[in-house]
Length: 452
Ligand code: SAH
Ligand code: SF4
Ligand code: F3S
Image (cartoon, rainbow, N blue to C red):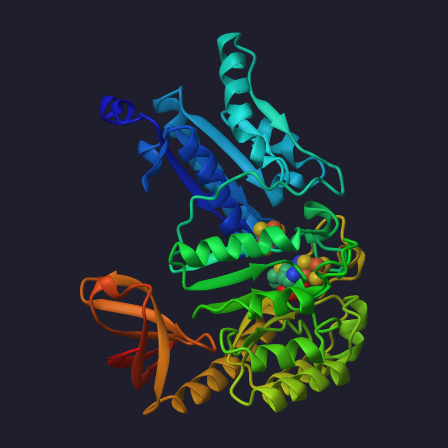
């Protein structure tokens, strides 16, 4: 067994990604660095010479899961000591965490933060030099709140026909529950010309969907002085004369503007799909969360979206059990969900994060949180089901995204609904018209009627 594993350790890497799309794309950048060093991807941890964990700390559950996963690597390291174990991402950026990981898991070799992972090739070299001198691991966490925006890493993309494109990094909002501003630093926007160059190159290379990434895309450009804001950036992207789909996340209800909503509605390439996390439906809770909008502002935006795009797929993130949330507050959330009728919502139990303002507030019992989330999920599932029913019998344009098994395909409608249908894998990356025949729990089932 040992020989089998060690003999296969030639230049293979394995990356496990936890957390959001931002992390998924950062893993593609790490893969790009490793490929440029001559490594090849493997899906088997045991086969990998380099094992990388890209971590998340948004909730306690995410962190616990990662700790469990790192623990499992001990045995692989024992089987082959030449293996290189790299831990990076949001979790390592928390105060004292890099040291904790290093002492709890002495077999970890390289620990990097969120903004210096582009140095990975140098760090691997440094580790090898250290190993020759038996000098242990490499830890490098950049605590600068405004680290430079790095442009020279070429991602090794794994999500064709979609391509992720960062437009900004970091967050300035400090929602009182959220760890992100502490682990990702302040907002830094990329140069608009470079964003456009990247999008044009991706479309030329055959990508069919571009998803712009930022913690709060609406504040794009506010840290630059070239006069380009999110609306003007979108306007430049709207001029691109090729058929593709544009999505972006995440929009913040305090900042999303009418001109952006109107532009989405008017631009054929821009998907009728807005992810607009509400977090809570009670004004008191929204205030305590430091979200800086209230129910009225949120409903105003929903009305605008529905005015310009009656079929828009609006999705949300919703949290229950924030400190001080009463039954009435929670009923306000249920009421909002009933009125907005989200196509889909990611629902979370509030999890206290050390160092955030809300972690110091009086917490509510877990039993209450868990009872509330069940009620919220039941309501949203019912709404999702009812919306799905309205699709049955209709023909929708779908971008074929994947072939999960021989003869079967899946893809999304413009407003983001998942559709499963039969077809061959050569069709991945094509737009097809699909007649929706059935509505199953989490996806629609259909049949291709003709290719677009
Ligand atoms: N920038 C985005 C999303 C950030 S994190 C935004 O502003 O919406 C993704 C989601 O995780 C958040 O929308 C929120 O619903 C959830 N989340 C963040 N911190 C959390 C915490 N401490 N406990 C539970 N859920 C949390
Ligand atoms: Fe977190 Fe709020 Fe920033 Fe989103 S906007 S990343 S929820 S602080
Ligand atoms: Fe994303 Fe988790 Fe970091 S949600 S920004 S990977 S804390």
